[in-house]
Length: 302
Image (cartoon, rainbow, N blue to C red):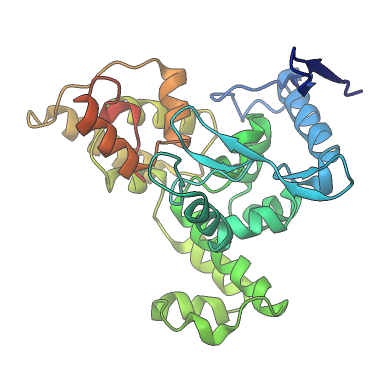
């Protein structure tokens, strides 16, 4: 039972206070150990909270007058989004965006819009069509704030989700297919393809979470974490992909041109990987504070 309290200030201002919910959350859980009581408990806690959220959507809140609105979350680094709607490629930030710009980035991005419009189970089921591990990961880790980010962490999964979402919105009449002509021919073709064809193309792709990391500068800590999480069943990777990743990892360590790795606490590193500060805002902070508070190992550029 959720209890609500009110604090009354000396000048008569009433502030509503809620109990904080306790989640069985852990970023580096073993997703292979499904018989572990902690695994089942995490699933039950997450689903219980989801069931008791408005429309099964963490982003929606019911106001005291019975109307519905959006439940925003503001991170310590200035990032703004709604609960469960965190994305690495679309990060509004208080330090560089106006309220209107923040709203535009949240409402006009097809992924973000779908996270506001559709409940969590609908989004999870779309991802599960091609990446059941990601769908499971978003629940078992048990951090609803960033459940959207865990759901589509892999770029390949995010692309599939985007295509399926666009297809659904075309069927619903929300998106006019003729307005998509600026997209690449490959994406346009994928949008008009049958679902089974897109699933097959996804499965045939050898692009993995390691391929994704290799496209960016090499932070040793992030690679260490990703290899560990892959061993814990967080990512859909085969033996060949793992071997290629290890060869790349060793080669990078032997490359003397790489800057030294700053040892950051793993929990902080794993958190920042899925909730990186907006890269433009981060660059401005680096210039202003001469890297005193922000370094490249703490931020995964979006």
